[in-house]
Every structure is written in C-alpha cells, then in structure tokens.
Length: 110
Image (cartoon, rainbow, N blue to C red; front, top):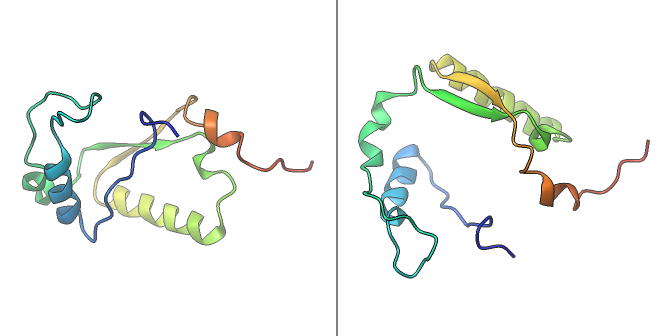
C-alpha cells in the first residue's frame, strides 16, 4: 500500500546469514528511486565483535501492548540475553509509528 513504509525483509537462521543478505541488497539500485547512493559495508566482518557497549533502542510505544503471554515472555528473554551480552537497552518513543496500525485494531470495551 505504501512503497515508502512497507518492505519485505529477509528471514535468516543466523546473524551471519542476515548480514550476507544485507550485503547483497544494500547500496544503490538504479530501478529504485528511493535507494541511496552510498558505499556498501561488509556487515558480516563485525559480527564476532559482539554487542558489548552498543545501544539498542526498544520502543516504549504500543509495540508491546496486547502481547500474547508467550510472545511477551520471548521478548523479555531476548532483552535479558541482549543485556547479558553487554548491550545498553534504551527506551525510544516512536509516536508516528502507530498512526496506521492503531486504526486497524479492534476497540477494547471498557
């Protein structure tokens, strides 16, 4: 519905596979008016360096409202793993991100 906000992304079994896919699709695409003319990076070369000291933004907005209990548990587990690997987890607000999705949610009776 919107070429600027809807994109299919690769699914991968590992960070290395995701990095390899990103290396293939990154960079300028002459058939895509929205692609950026920028040098591509070797994304897989830094994976083994880990995430210690890196900051990861976790949305504070509606993204985690109404989660099924097993999904909420998986999110909490992922946060614990990232924290244990030395990442700094920081809440971020994305007020514009829910503009389209909120209108598709059924109203909750109060």
